[in-house]
Image (cartoon, rainbow, N blue to C red; front, side, top):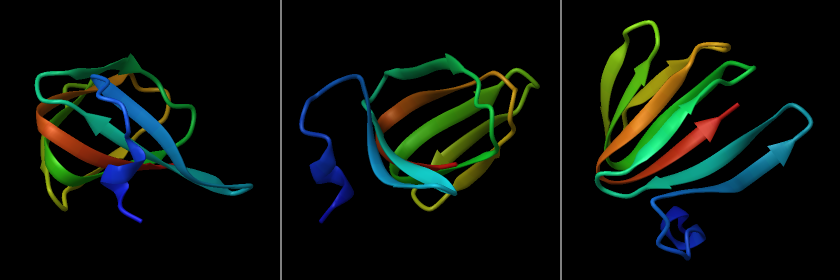
Length: 95
């Protein structure tokens, strides 16, 4: 299987469950060029990995990080954050 094959519709932002267990989960996220994963908060620590493309991760604490293929960022719980798609991107979110 391939991550790209999970997203069958051309939505601005698509999130599909990749793996779930009682200890955590992984979500495949696709963000189209010029689109945005709107502001939100996670209750648990998370790891966002860019598999392909380029995005900008930002949070309310002023952190702004460009993620390209292979880059990752740790997401703090209870901190508002968002992601902008610079190019069409494939991401993995692990919680």
